[in-house]
Length: 130
Image (cartoon, rainbow, N blue to C red; front, side):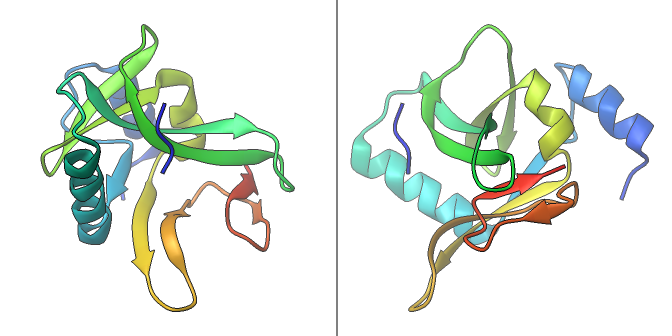
């Protein structure tokens, strides 16, 4: 692995549907641009996609994960502006409605997560609780 407003009932139903048109997470234009740049630089094959997810741990309980990976059995697959995205189906509960952005400024550089489900976050913004 390489690291680098609808109703709740409708959202959960859509996450469970493999032919969905709604995506559980969104990517900003900056994030899409950076992901496509990284895919090109790393010369990744078509079987790789952007994996977005969560892991247990971090100062607030859960940590965000983002990287390039191949699709796994329990993954949901969707496409955002030409970017293939994989997410473990069980992570949808924590990430539903999350916006992934890429910051490239003097004070901040990297992928950031704006998660409406987070009840608290840490100072660095890479972990949360829900």
